[in-house]
Image 1 (tube, helix red, strand yellow):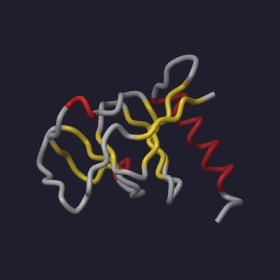
Image 2 (tube, rainbow, N blue to C red; image 1 turned 90 degrees about the vertical axis):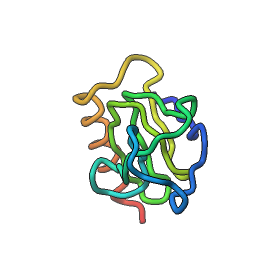
Image 3 (cartoon, rainbow, N blue to C red; image 1 turned 60 degrees about the horizontal axis):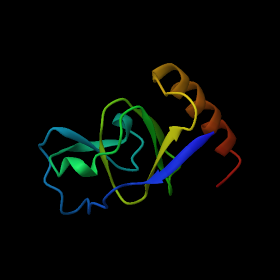
Length: 103
């Protein structure tokens, strides 16, 4: 159902200078996973209309704009069709519920 990819570049969150234009998505569970905004080489932006998935924390958020991520984030896009806020919200709710049984 999903194409799952690794971030295009691994950024060290301790060395990032915030105050830029593009979201930097980490594994946090607040603010849609956005830790701040940065400016980096645009070739490393992840696509908009995807789900960011925190590997260690199982945090999932729909990202409607291009974004940068940390190294423990997977980027999920639909194999067939496009994600939007409505269908992404449904899919995230289902995935979160299915993960409740895991620790």
